[in-house]
Image 1 (spheres, rainbow, N blue to C red):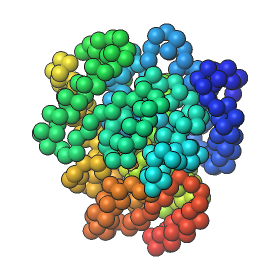
Image 2 (cartoon, rainbow, N blue to C red):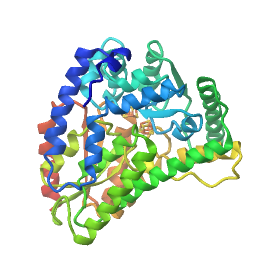
Image 3 (cartoon, protein in one colour):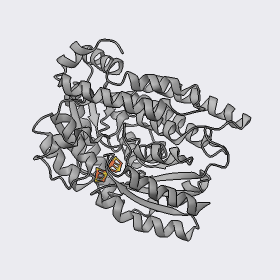
Image 4 (tube, rainbow, N blue to C red):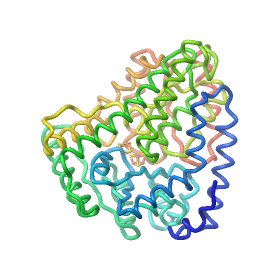
Length: 423
Ligand code: SF4
Ligand code: SF4
């Protein structure tokens, strides 16, 4: 990595704390990722992206800002990145997948809050996230109560705008969501000083769809036996999707998919053909939350899909065709996003159906349903998910955890028992 200290100082990062974070991340990445065997060559690009996540990519964002462009930070897949792009902005997903920042939220938000929410706020408070610091505005959403209240606090420290999300999938909710998207457009137009044009929006949606198609292609390859790529590597690609340059990322994912398709022909796998196969389902696993996958894959099982927002909920639903007008395109974006079967909706039976069909499509031997501590919506849905999978004859294991390493041994024991039972 080059010398980025001046840039980090200009971004008002806490350099000592930030060094500590980079030290931990570098060590964990080497232990978990670089130690894997039989990785596809194409993963080298993604290793490079991780190594430069706080360096080169941040420098690119600063260059974009120096030219008058804006950076928009988002915490949820409901924030439409094509709208940001069409207004000349760059949208970055704010990962917050590490317990490193959780303590920095102490005293601001109750400790019995989802660690994702606590870390999101913590990364702002301890000034270690160059993506938050580079964001001209943060776009939040009231998908769950914890986030809703966290964004009120975040707004005291960083410019923040909150989208109002529908709770149901009715026609009235769709109308409400379309008007919320239009309000977001007004906000982002004011932020960027640009007017949203139909041509620019359809070009941006086209780029987004090309990116999602590349990720879909990669994930389709994982249905093969043996799985041509580890779950850890596939998860990393989904995590990087939220912050890399869109055109470069799409090209590299397609190159990786080419390689995986060639590996399938040669029957070359990241794991042996007899390795037990698992589908992940549950709360998002943002960068660098690799704990569960690293524990499971060290036991010789392979994850073959993720029913998650860092996974299928991000890439599955395509934007429907429309008449090309601005109104028509915004309605189409609303329909695309309403196809994201997040547990914030009620009822949300489509998600349960998705999990059953994904388990079949990926040739999974079992499903791990995983939710972050204090996430009530996903915990509540785990009961329905278990019922549906049992009915379909698919073994399921429900786990709850946070980002800390404290429960690693317990997760390992439960996963071991589950894998034994599947055999
Ligand atoms: S789980 Fe729901 S709230 Fe969380 S990122 Fe996904 S869509 Fe957004
Ligand atoms: S994991 Fe659950 S509680 Fe945490 S932010 Fe997402 S929906 Fe909210």
